Length: 471
Image (cartoon, rainbow, N blue to C red; front, side, top):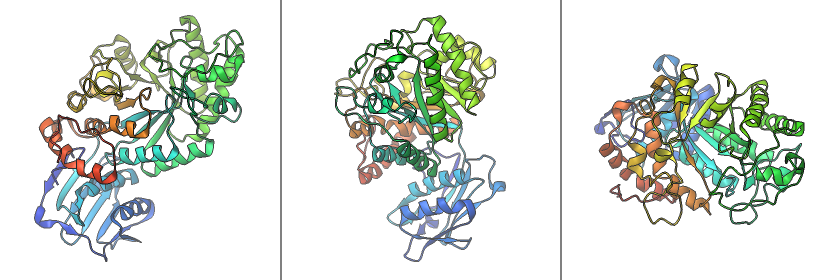
């Protein structure tokens, strides 16, 4: 019971009270807890009953916990009880229970737990290389096991537009037709995207879609000439984009704002979550006055759709952004006056410092895939910082959470995605979930080594970092 990732708030192992699964074991739940019970039963190959009498009993009880994602788990010889105030809390507890399960035995003891930060996420870039619906679902399953609760999808960039927009169909058929290095690319139909969003939601993961504007837009510009300042479509772009910021929507044309309104409306209708991500980074090809005018027109569009805006931290250069706007910091400095000013205005921030959580950075020199412009980032580098004290003028209360971006310029296959994401995402999960007092590298490294056989059993192509004494 002392090998759980992320580390719980409180854990008391009682090995003598371990619970043994039999062919007669059933899991019980009522109401909104039933889908969580069904998920657990599928993992343990047992049956579900509606009610309270199962040997493994899941209970929704707001009085049992103080946090919406909190839970209490008690494992005894005769019965296992899991209580939470919400289905999300039950689901988090189920992930702990599954880590305690091995060879039909659930380790005995008690766990009381709740997350430190509300937003604990990963970003997957499918613009540079496209990944299938099945591959993204596999990624979602791995995120869920570590209580990560946000999947940020980077859906558009210079190399590819990956979501069907029915009012602008060439975005998908032309802009989605290629990727880095050429090849077929691909895109998600709206039905595909709905399926992904629903699959993630069933695992209590919220999808945040990113439509990156006004730069990083070659795929859109190649699809519709009228979005270009000169009315001439550029060729599709299949390079890695090591030199960025060379494209821009025509911010002085009214058609651009009709385009933005249509795209945001369709994406918002497909996305039940609170946020739409607008990118807004590396807009070198957009004159600053035009960039400000663009944001002045587009930010209210998001609000009118009932959503809030996320954007890379460059969005703080926009004219008086709404206090609900969340800047995502990807820099490497621990001090940024714009971030501190945003917090002083009442904004909350999302932390993704590149030298700590950019998962496209190499683990060590000499790797065939990945970059090293932010340095090599091994597991200890991901684990070795505190989001609550990282930035001057950004107290823990102002930190919405942390997110680990995985850019895909060098990732030619989904196997490459897994190699770069794991095991580092487990460290991200612990930073986001566990209390600061529970952060201990030696303990984490030991628990991570113990988790390795589970990845082996699942066929996950994780990187066997030399920093971990894998079993």
